[in-house]
Image (cartoon, rainbow, N blue to C red):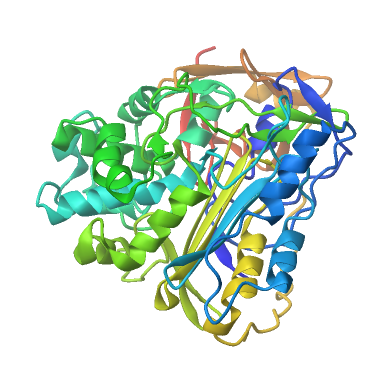
Amino acid sequence: MINLPLDETMKHEGEHRVKHRAKHRVKHQPQAQPQRQPQDQPQDQPQLQRQPQLQRQLPSRARCLVGVFATLIMIAPAAGGAQTQSQRARADSVFADFNVTTPGASVVVVRQGEVVFRAGYGMANLDHGLPITPETVFDVASVSKQFGAFAISALVESGTIDLDAPVSQYLPELPDFGAPLTVQHLVHHISGIRDWPITLAIAGWRYDDVISFDQILRMTWNQKELNFPPGNEYSYSNTGYNLLAEIVQRVTGASFASWTHDNIFGPLGMANTHFQDDHTMVVPLRAQGYIPGADGTWAVSPNGLTALGSSSLHSSVDDMARWLINFDTRTVGGPSVIDRMHTRGVLNSGDTIAYAYGLSGSTWRDRQMWTHSGSWAGNRTVITHFPEIRSGVVILANSGIYNPAPASQEMAEIFLADLLGPDTQSTAQSPSPQPSPDPPPVLSSLELEEYEGDWVSEELDTRYVLSVVGGVLVADHYRHGRTVLTPRAPDEFMGDQFFLRPVRFSRDADGRLADMFVGEGRARNLRFVRSR
């Protein structure tokens, strides 16, 4: 199976929005959302996720259009002869769960520098019955990072940016964390900078809020400490790539959207691609993102994000094919810039990590493979490139419960099988038995009352009120409402909302309760003090 770095919000997006959905919904058959691994770890991709089937039928004209785009839009023949009917049928079967009653996906396959397959499946907009085509524009989410990384690599090549320079040299607003923090640390996600999706959620933000680039920067200027000393660990941080985009703006004097247009999208002819720096912008041909709604419905997933550098790139598979091919032709950027983008990070320990410049490297079917996935506002995306055979696959989807990675593998096997090596995947061994964890403590109402009070974070400018209700400790927030806190260990609790996991309390030398700390993983130990 293809291993991909899982993107920032795939795990939590539906959970975060379940109480805050758009009003307009279309019926579908209820389906459980698949279990997902932590977002900063690779994932062995599961089988293709089946899509809920909508009960409402769309007009016959729309059904006809979808059929055209799903089966007839094929261009250049595969190497060694015309594309076979079998290949077309197999490709269609990969996306068979998408139809005129569901969101869907568009796909492009590049073989030895030529596009050999492009198609659209399902609907770009369920309100208006608009089908997905290869020209449909999606928010590609974290696939955006490789374009921010290209900008850094190009400006390093021109001598404008020094990878080993402290970030504060370019961004003096960044706090002094007491340890050297360089541009290179940001590129490889080894900086220790907190990830904004979790940090802002703890602060009270919802993913359906307007979240602007400037707001993300202001949050970062107020960060009090790092997750870890720079270079000690790999921990995926969208915020790090937002800082990279701001560095590009500072050193060039151009907006990030303008710089990437003038230096990437324009030269490559990517006419339907742009970084969105205004969430109210009209975007022609844009697909609406969808997530499962309540009571067997589809729900619109609002998108008010302008997270330049890490996210917020809008593009089509037709345009992304041009980008994919440029990794091999190196027409834009040149060999040094593209080679640098494939340089993996190195930790202080000397260990080399998989992550390079917005790309994660691995081997599949005896071929070097570079990938990245994306997830935001009901969009699910993946790009896969095999440099040794000048080939790759891009899939962009607008279903929030769809995982495009298995389909990327299947499309590679359909159109690139003779260029790939043998399938030598070994059978996974059963994990060694792990000792059972200690049982969680059982606390009385009197014991829980010790944690009551108003807990305030200066860094996040937010407050949680902890109280005991019906023998249970709860945390109330003016935006998130009530979160139930369940004991997990002494002075440690787990919230029933993802952003309050875990909640820990420290004690002073006399054993009295001191501070409260929230978070782990990408956003660790955010400090709260009791104000009363």
